[in-house]
Image (spheres, rainbow, N blue to C red):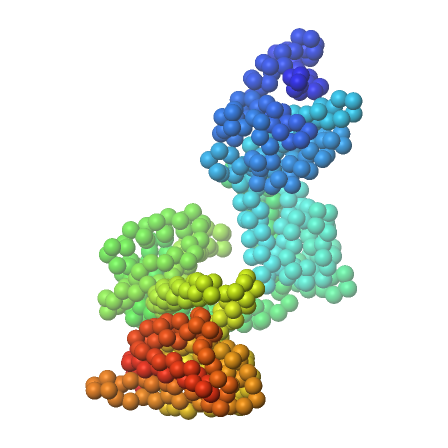
Length: 596
């Protein structure tokens, strides 16, 4: 087999002049080129890989060359698509893919490739691979930030839109479109979202002279200016814009944001302000403002309820009075973040009441700015999460209990499968019997779930397990109200299922004659209360054994009684089965019922 080639390779010397093909050293180029490069056959087998490629994937040559390229990619369909395109003569440029490297991590790469053909058939392909993991992560973070930014603005009831540095509208929220009475063409319309603008004295104001245009041209916020806007339907409304340039970390101007305040109803705006103030005051959460020196400047009723201080006692004092001694280092960090304009969200910590008691809280802290945009303090919402923490603890306890119960279920099912397998005549019978028994177990489980795992009455359990067989009218049940615990429900449920199954095959329920009587009672034996239950079939066909000595016999004679710490007897009489069970009531009855 001839050595694979790169195909049409163009090289340049240090003067930028192309080198003739006879002067071009293929091996030197392949090994020393600084970009990750590998050759792949038309079938997707890696033929060669240079050092940069091996450094990228982290594999030694012997573990990389000779294997299918798709093995090293998270998306095999990507490799198939690339090879299909190359085989059709297409060239691949910066095709995004996810490369799985030696340490198991995923790298985002871009593949550039073209095919080498012989007699019109793809022989191999050279593939340049560029690691763009950092770039992709940056893109992902930017997309997330952009999505979050737009979601926040879309949810606001205030009219807001943004432009690029040239005034072209890049975003407009729903409130701005509703206010303007039109949807601006994103990427086309400039300066304003409104149809027309006028000065307060009625003179038409060209869009390129509006406050947003001035803010961008002079790179400064433009406040305290009013205008009159006209909608496309001819209606007018007074508006106050707040155009503000947006600067990046280098101080450059990528665009601006504008908020439009409808002044049609100033009184309504004032009502809204009072309404928001009322919400703060009536909020159950503690809402507190402080300056950058940690001094409390506002204190709502929620804060009074939560911390025990009234407004007169709190305002003017340092917020550190609410912080336990071992958490005092938190406040300097919070203030530093606020100075940087950061928002602190869902910060869980511990705070102190007036009486000295400690309690867990969740804090959300936001910077407070003055009219000039300067950060002058912070607004804090504190929520008592004592109940939430207790709920988490209860949930963890519940999950441990669920885990324990599920493991018990697994043990029951495994035992059921093992015993059924020993006695099944063939796979079909085995499958049917296991399915029926698991369904019986499921019915018991459903009853426990419905009762919040507190227990199930004997009557409910019997009815659930015998109902699928029909002929409920021939089954009589009587006994005191006994609520069985989850363990008894599961094992007695299996026992009742086996009794009903056997009766449907060989006993009373298999014919038209006979009846089944199930009786249970609670009696004293010395100082111990005993639970007694009897399943008695009368006037039915003669039964030789339960399931011919199979799984049912094991359940009724050993598994079920041992599970509840009791004993049982099983008699195959001339007219049907009689099964009796005795067990300590404490092993059968739910603790809920025992405490009642």
